[in-house]
Image (cartoon, rainbow, N blue to C red; front, side, top):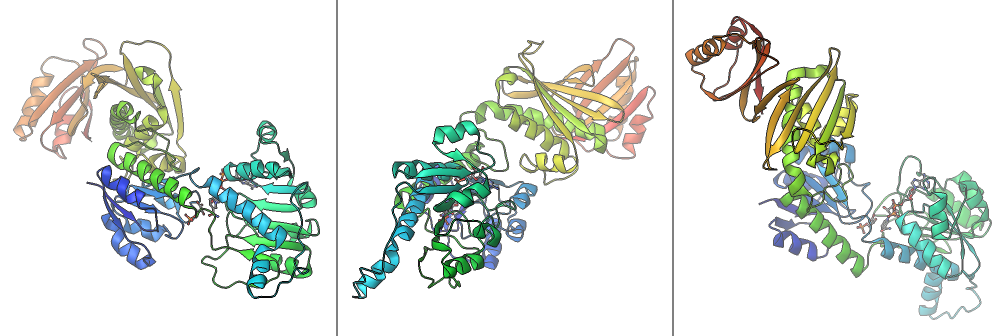
Length: 525
Ligand SMILES: NC(=O)c1ccc[n+]([C@@H]2O[C@H](COP(=O)([O-])OP(=O)(O)OC[C@H]3O[C@@H](n4cnc5c(N)ncnc54)[C@H](O)[C@@H]3O)[C@@H](O)[C@H]2O)c1
Ligand SMILES: O=C(O)[C@H](O)COP(=O)(O)O
């Protein structure tokens, strides 16, 4: 039974779903980094929000971990390259809290437009300072959106409803989508010059870090009001403090800070500065949504191999998984076969499918080929890190889908390129379930690729099989299965034997020195 750790505060629905789906679940929140490192080795799944930091060190200790699920959007608290390198899938719930966060951005926009928190504090202090709090309307003002994805799109929709004009800076926003959203796509400088309100909705990346830098803030319209419900680090907080103090920026609201938890900040106490403690996603609706989604996704993965919303692996729905999984098993074995036979010289891999296989999602199949192929060099390779390792090694990977009908109802072919040229192996599924090799380097051979095997290339001549049997038998090696193929009678023959005991040196050399033998290789699947 897979074990899941929920390490951040999450709606109880998450634990309930894990249990219903057959996972054992522990909810242990508020642990330090060292405490997490000490316990993480026991778990197959880790469900988090933004508090748990899934660092390289945590991942190194997570020897059983298969999946990290983020009940929310931002995954900047997860070292994704380190997770990928260790073969751990990282998933998030990209839509579950978008409306809630967009509403928080709108709420903060109103808060800074009308100085609501200060007016509230003053009134409750018995001051009744009616003349102190003069606000501005949102109607007819220009809102500048930095980042126009899911949340930016919802903010734009709500702002248009409030009769604002919306301009958006997002290099990945297509003109068609901008029209659909009812926003004007502009450059960052244009946005800074025109916006009365600016809201930020991008992830924190090298390109967005300090996107509202001191220089950018200097380009904004005097009296601009700024809201950040996305990520700390998008705004230069010291420059924002100076701009608020000088009156160039008329108001600012931050839900997120460069350092969190933000228990001290030079911005605290600044007039018309509003802050909330990373509450963007904190509504009961959003927390139920993300808890259900993350638990469903993680349970799908742990129990049936379905992959949804993974950031480091292609998607595979729980419905698709049963159909694709036998192909993944075939793909992994073909990859392992050709990887063992062609060694580290491979510079390119082509994965081709035809017949029934051509209708399937190819990404997991290609991932499995690479896992088999790269697994020859390391025990820790899997579907998640194989494509990553292949890229690191500079492997050129191609996928080809054929419409044609071949000899088999379904066929998967793996072709590799080395300095010697290209060579391929192919396999099919018997009964749509059992992986079977059908061709190796142009020779038709039907074989199960399982356990320990011997691959022998020899000249097709009478007496060879007897000599081989005696040599192996004499060394105490029992032959389980025997598969033979040849190019033509008297030509080159290929033998694939399954053996019950390991065949090692010097026996391999002895087999190799039998008359007519050209190549011998011990294989393992
Ligand atoms: N405060 C909270 O509690 C809270 C809650 C949910 C999400 N978030 C954060 O809000 C942000 C937006 O979330 P989302 O769901 O809309 O993400 P999204 O991926 O749907 O949208 C992000 C947008 O940013 C754009 N972008 C990327 N690089 C950019 C750049 N250099 N300049 C301008 N635009 C750029 C992308 O093209 C995309 O359209 C994320 O950082 C997320 O972590 C915060
Ligand atoms: O990216 C997100 O989803 C938000 O930052 C929410 O973070 P939280 O789950 O810690 O509230």
